[in-house]
Amino acid sequence: MSTLHQVEPEGETYRLNPEIHDQLMGSSSRPGPLQPKGQPLTLPEPEFPAHPELLERRMTDEEFHKFNRGRALRAWAVPYLQSRWHRKQLRPIVAYLFTEYKCNLDCHYCWAYNNKVKGMTEDTARRSIDWLEDIGCRVLALMGGEPLLRWPFVHKVTAYAASKGFFVYLATNGRLMRPKVIDRLGDAGVSVINLAIDSVEERPELPKAFKPIEENFEYMVKMQRHYGYSSFININVTRINIEDAMELTEIGKRYNIATDYHINETPMMEQEHFKHQDENSTFITPDDYGRIDDLVDWLVAKHDAGYKMANPREQILNMKNMMRGKIEPWSCRAGQNTLIIREDGTLAPCFPTYGATRDWGRVEEPKFDLVQLDEMKESCTTSCFSTLNSIVGHCYDDIRIIKWMAKQAKNRFRGVTGSM
Ligand code: SF4
Image (tube, rainbow, N blue to C red; front, side, top):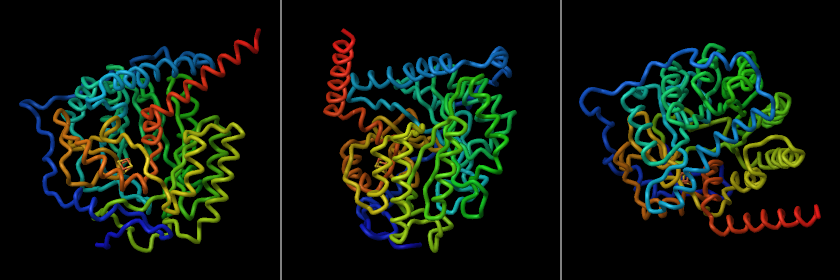
């Protein structure tokens, strides 16, 4: 077991403040799994095809964008506004449902899987979705491990959640995303596919690659305009895939889908099951900063040139500070407006805290404590690069919102006067 230490500004690892780490890991009070209340609940068997008419015509660009705008408005904007009204309640805008913690690949930087952990039960999945519906959440992100290891289960979860109006987001490495699977998920109403790939050709350290899934990828892109989902390529920038990150950016452009970037992070907390903690060829070292700075500048130039990217420009630029351990504390809403549900139904604020033993409650019985979360975030926000939580954080920053509204009003006024 390696020794935990504080963030090293010029070092190669990022770790949580030891005091906070002990508070999160030192406790043996993590609640047991969610237990069925009597007869375990099941998920309805989805009909397939439920929407054969979708195969008959391809959406135009206008139809596709209109369809996705309407879906996003219902699933993101309405719950967001409700959460501003019910400020004191737990109102997640996005919930991550870890249906699986097993994985079919072994990326050397990744500790977010454990092949000994059993997948989620139907009882837990159904009660999670019902509970989230009750507390106003309408965005459900299916996570792993690799969720498609049990794709029939994911099909059921997607169909059930979509039938309740959820925006269902699927994160996958794509290896098992065959046409048969894409058709079922598309037909069931999946909204977004986050395809995590880090290199073009497969290699032992970075097996999430484009070439082994190229045919499935083309089918996924083609079927977007029938089923209405959108997709993007999610790239983790490590010390050994800088050229790949550029090539994957161009692939995204060629297929007209967005790309999203992360800077590789070493585990924030001790992860006993992580096999590659030592001598890891993917971890960024100070010797790599110059090459990654060049990549960041290249990405920003592409962003400015109109390439579709999920990260805001400012966040891409911030990758330079992130790898140097020079991030200022920021307003993270994990445990308030985002949360994760582990495969056993227990709750935690976010992925990096997945392994914590602290008791944040279970589905139907949350126990998030704002004082504890604020104290934790003073430390962890300085070493965390969460695209979603930073975007959600901006949405709850009142000053930023007022400035944004003022800018919109000014632009509109200019538009009006300009057209007179
Ligand atoms: S900054 Fe937010 S998302 Fe990141 S580890 Fe801390 S609580 Fe979790």
